Each structure stands twice: as C-alpha cells, then as structure tokens.
Length: 197
Image 1 (tube, one colour):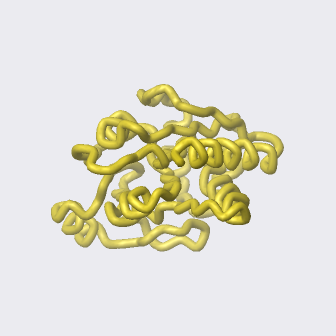
Image 2 (spheres, rainbow, N blue to C red):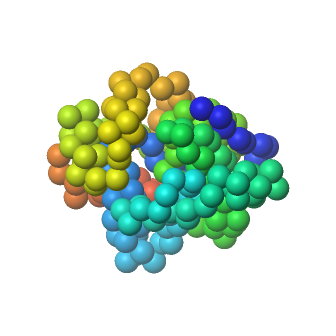
Image 3 (cartoon, helix red, strand yellow):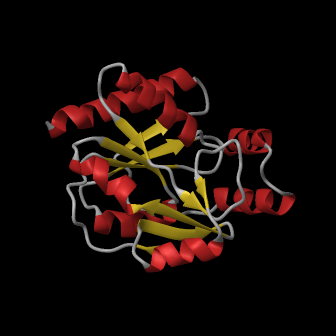
C-alpha cells in the first residue's frame, strides 16, 4: 500500500482517525455520533474522502478518475493519500485542516496501514479502533452489495492480516448493541472537545 504524508502544520488534538476492518460499522457510527454531538452544539466534521472507485450510493465519498486523483495528489491537495483494494483514497487538505483551525472535531475513516505516517504528520491526533468479529463483518460487507467476488475475497483476506499500526487511544466493540457503541464514541469525542477548550 502506497501512502502520502508530510510535516504537521496544524494543531491536531481534535483530529480522530477511525479505523477497523471492513464491515466494522465505522461510517454508521461516525454519522450517528456526529448527530448526537450536534444536539449539544458541538460540530463534528466527517471528512469526505476522494476515491477512484466507481460511484456507490452506500458511501458518501467524492468519486474521481485515477488521472484526476493523481493530478490533485501531485499538486499537494491531499493531506493524506493511500492505495489499497486497487483504488486511490485521499483526504483533501482543506477539508481536514480547515475545521481543525476552527477548533472543530474532524473524523476520518482511514486505512490502518497509513496510521504511522498519519501520526507523524499529525502527532496530537487520536486513533479509535472499532472492533467486530469477522463473521459479523463479512455479513455486513455482503449486505451492502457493492463488492465483486474478487473484491470480497480481498477484503476477507485483509481481515485476517495483522496490520502494523500505533496503539489506539480508544477501542470500541461494535458487534452487538449499535446504540451503545455509538454512545461510547460520542462520549469520547465530547471528552476530547471539552479537554481542548
């Protein structure tokens, strides 16, 4: 997996990387936690990634061609980028660093494999690991119906890999009660926000 990261330039204590195997429920948990905190007037930005995978209704990402992605990457438009599952993924710099400069929380769903580079660039950032049993993760991936047989096999194989990553700052299980897992995430984010003020 190819990654792209440079030197830290912003205060990143409200930057939270949410990671976990495919099917762990990261996107769902981020959306629900953001809604909870919004009711308490705490702004949570869920970063919209740029991806070279074809458009999919089940995921809120910005879909671009490989050529456009690489052009933007060469111009330094991505704070972080990586190549996995035969696609490029990128975190637009303005979307990531702008809210941090305003003192807002930023949640980013990233590959576990880029966390060491990401932590070097944003040393105050936090890592939340969402854990789920492999059988439940596989059922969720199949249910969303966007994977070909080959892509499904690749994701299943990656579930069993021991990905090298820094120790997470928080670990949340999401293979049972979703509401409880979401509450754990929102409580953690609220604590980070209050601590930063």
